[in-house]
Length: 156
Image (cartoon, rainbow, N blue to C red; front, side, top):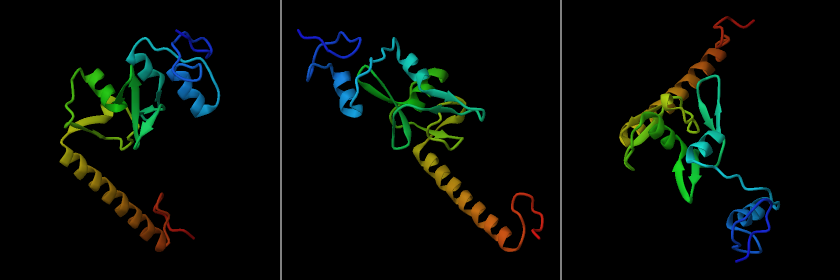
């Protein structure tokens, strides 16, 4: 069996003298670099987390439709759902949804996630967007009457 010619690789060849991971990497970047091996899915998760001062744990890895995607051993997970399950010691069903209380869909901090029904999650999203729109409308009004919306002081 032929082995991959990629750097520091001992996997079997899939195409063009490369293993599956190096072949995908070469097609994506045009370069070959060593493939990182992770002992556990938890190692892979923490590699892609950036903790911010506001408390959010921002997912810096791959994303799909605004949500972090975690891949391990050929299986994909939503990063925030994985984090919630691991830190809360629960298993979510496919029908259960999580609401990002911080409104950042890349946040994986379980303290910023709440398990809610799909209907409640949608209603919260609509309410949030309505409040943002109303806030923008009020700020524009305050400016139009000659006040600074930050300090509420008359602008001269």
